[in-house]
Length: 117
Image (cartoon, rainbow, N blue to C red):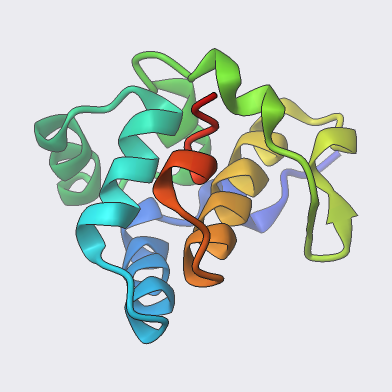
């Protein structure tokens, strides 16, 4: 079975799109970064290095320092698919991030996006 093309796509190519989507709705790059740090455990320096290296999505998530255990609380639909029902782990991580960015763009409070109780 061939890998989905997003796995080999550079995270650095999609990252500006996440920022643009957020900024279009009055949110900030800092909030996008905070979501990425929360989800993956990357620090600012580590994220910058991944962007500089043009790391693909599969490697980006495989090398994530600490995937947040609370990410399993992320529920909902992205691209017509329920994120909690995605069986392929890497695709699920990608869709978790997509869902969080969608929530940011829809104006949801950061506390709720980051699943703080």
